Length: 313
Image (cartoon, rainbow, N blue to C red; front, side, top):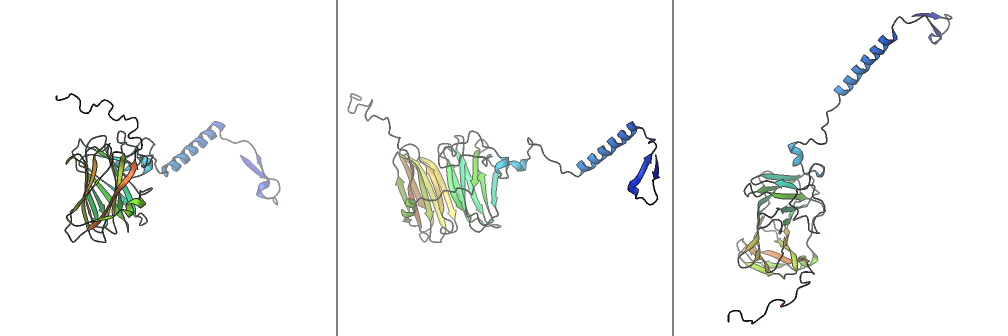
């Protein structure tokens, strides 16, 4: 193409275009398409790759994030109670012989709640609180005969973070359980539980029988600052342990132990044993937590039973 200035004193904006372009319009469009393709390639080369919604790495399963975990089917024993959280997105499955940890870096997290349940099989676990290197201020051994009927629920004190809760399934591979550790909506002892404390000397034990209407009980153990060593047993019948908790806490005042035991059925007795020497007394409180008012509804006293009948005569 040729250009012509109308007047030498005029500005370049007054340039007049004369003639025709020697380039074919199809060639011009081709070059434009090539330039656009190159620009698009350069833009995508510096864009971070994104994972699709259906892909998930192994780390995503155990990050403790609500967004990346799903509820474990068949392990809803601990989640069907009214006092438990309605959702269980953070619940993960712990296979036999494996270890899972939950870390809390913030010092504002002063206590967490641990919930363990199974699909009806026995539950055998070690729970430890790690606070610094080679420092385990609290640890417990938990055994439950039926993790669906009697899920384990306890509160672990975590002052002065960071803290890590470690849960190890010490059962066989055939006995997995679902574990959930959370710091929101942690249960606290009731006023009746705080007012019902009784001293248990070292080496002594105390039993607490409960009526059939009691569905669950609260257990609170603490000391005056000395170490706490105790064993909590839930009995149903003579020497029939339905649940056993062996507990150690280095400071029973700074880190008291609080748990809720499910007591379905009749003949439930909670036995607290102070396994420490006589120099280490502790205070214990065991009170009802929930009561089933409809337990005796529809029952007829002596309905089909004849006392003093001809049986045996």
